[in-house]
Image (tube, rainbow, N blue to C red; front, side, top):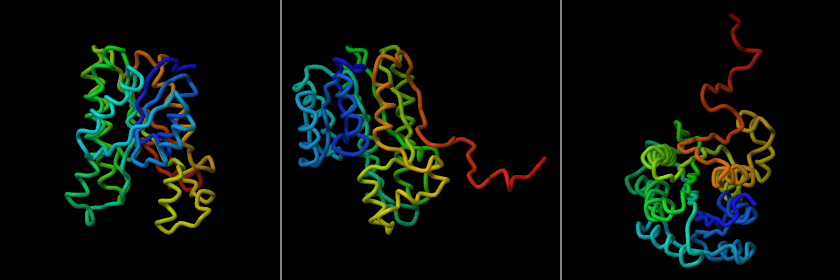
Length: 263
């Protein structure tokens, strides 16, 4: 029971990576406030997890929602030991299609809400020597051409993690960050279908994106999250960890042994 006795808030916990983290955290002995926006999805997750979980429905576009989430966690479990900022909007945009409204919406959910949730929970995190785990994306480094606003938001989130880790190390509140690669969630599967992919697209992902022959699964992200949420990773803070199938820095998938220039 690597998280025994801990109370953890997981945003976007009713599906995908967030659901997998919530489920794994409960399996490791934690109690979890599961945040989401769809009641049916949330009730299904919390129903499966039982008394160790409580559901809180809220729209992260509302700047008052983080304070409500913290109040809900305290009402349900009496303390907060960790926050997982997982919820995010993923929407395609580029220089030609983005707008002020799209940018503001993306930043509000993907950056402002995590910041305000950490702020609202900070007194509890400090009192309990707790931690924050921010779920980012490898798009933080530069991103895809068709994910302009999303990539900008994930770059900002990465800086948020490092800034708070530096600013609050003496408070013994650890802030760490996972930059995840391409993960096969139910939402990602549906998203690709909506954009014209065939029903069997996960079985046909190009090797440069999935050299292992498959995409990463949410449960594998959750397994990594347990380490950063637990005391095993203490006192490490400010870590940005890439959870991807290949090296991010210096990667050049077009180069192979057969076409590289010999020196």
